[in-house]
Image (cartoon, rainbow, N blue to C red; front, side, top):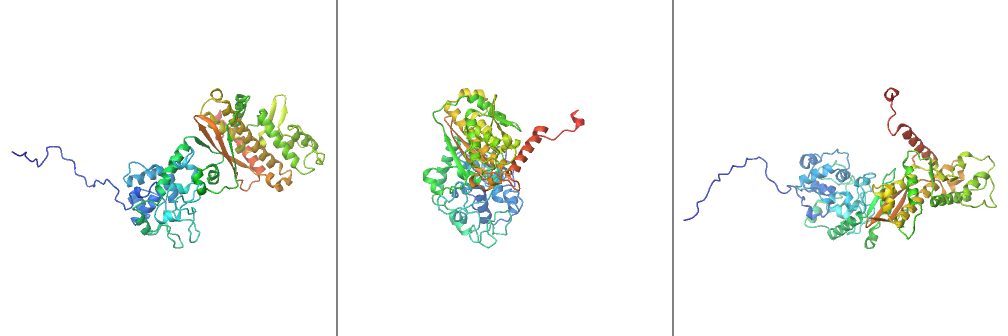
Length: 494
């Protein structure tokens, strides 16, 4: 006898719902497997074109609320909330890792650093087919790795900035004002069947390399960080096989230090003295023997380059004293009395040690050594770091701090002297200018073993360099006086 058929189960019936159960996105072009490691903006751009969306559809269909004047490429790169909304609209469990800009960095740093000076950058052939990846935004790449085309920020037809605002006419997103379409609908539909040739393999290899580098390299951001693109292009060194794709070497000065078999004498005392640079107005820094020798050479070198009759006899003696040399036979002293302001610029030698007057230096020159110490200690006290570090580690750290201070002192000295010695403005390499270093630090097997620096010019606006140093000191003076906050009224203070 056959088993009876149960037409109606006794289990509790599920409540009816007017909403359909959709397990995949209803949008054309929503399958991201055809565009490996696409950026969030690239995904949105394809959806807009292939689904004939209007600006209002960003909020209505994708849940992306933006102003029409906003740069959609920037919004979709730096807004985590909007990336989550887009992932939800595409029925993804979470935003893909390739939408996170910091996942493309070969050093540990927040992705928001590239928000300053952001410009949408693309490969014309990739974008024509509706493909864009955050690798195209990396300053250390100049060409598309699989097409070889130079990466652009402007329309190839007229030179106008790429139209990426959230404001377009129907079916004309990424269409320039000149009529040139940066994204072609037919090409996007054709390429939906597969990725650009070579893209998937290269991107997987790059992301693996970047993850390995990020585990050992960490970035130290300068005090007045601005647009970091030129600094990043100089800091990052691509593997030999990719060097042809890299950005051309610019005019920024770059230097790298590695550990050597040396011993840093008095390292703990030197680190404690450097710790005084955290103050709002450090005033004077007690110099270690190595720092004293470097700063003395800076003062002597500049004094010997100055034209005749610029320094008084006593001033020249002070500038050369640290280096232990005498003035040249051709030296002619200035026909004026010794200046107290100029006399305090060379390192001071006293019974308590040798000191450097930091009033002639901008904070961007004397803060980085402290930031470098913080990157090396990783939250440990100076005593713990000193006892747990190798002599090679300590030597590398102190050598770099010494050279950062010496360079900052050299620049500050020229800037402060320039208003009194106008001839400095015509001395090309020794002309007044201020820079700040971007630093990346490598820790191998938990030990500090390499440091790389690139010096970026400090924007001074309408100020002269000496005025910029004075303005920074005045700001520090106010913070020191009021404790970094607003001044309290006398009634409240009582």
